[in-house]
Amino acid sequence: MPMLIVQNLSGRKIPVAPGQTLLGAIQEQHIDWMHACGGKGRCTTCRIIVQQGLDNFGPLTEAELRYRAKGRLKNNERLTCQCTLAHGNATVKVPDQTKLPHLAYSS
Ligand code: FES
Image (tube, rainbow, N blue to C red; front, side, top):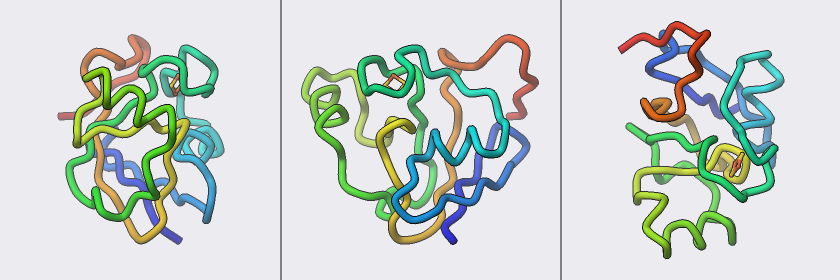
C-alpha cells in the first residue's frame, strides 16, 4: 500500500488505501490535521507541500484545478481532502501557515 510520509511530523508514515483521500488516511491514524471546510475542497487549509513523489499522486481534482488557476495552490502542493496516492509513496510537509498550535512539528 502506498505510504504518505510526513517529514515535519517526525517522518510519520501513513498508509493510504486505493482511492482513499490523504485526509481520510491521516484521520484514520488519529492525527490532527487542519481542514477548515470539512474536507469539501472549499479552502486550502488541508494542503501539503510535496517534497518527493509528486508523480505518484492521482489526477488533480476540479477543486484543485480551481485553486491552481487562482494561484492559491502551487505546482508542488495538493489538497489532502481531494487527492489520492495512486502509484507509490510521497514525502510531504505541513506548511507553516497551517500547523496546529497544539502539535509539535519537527523540521
Ligand atoms: S479541507 Fe478545505 S479544501 Fe481540504
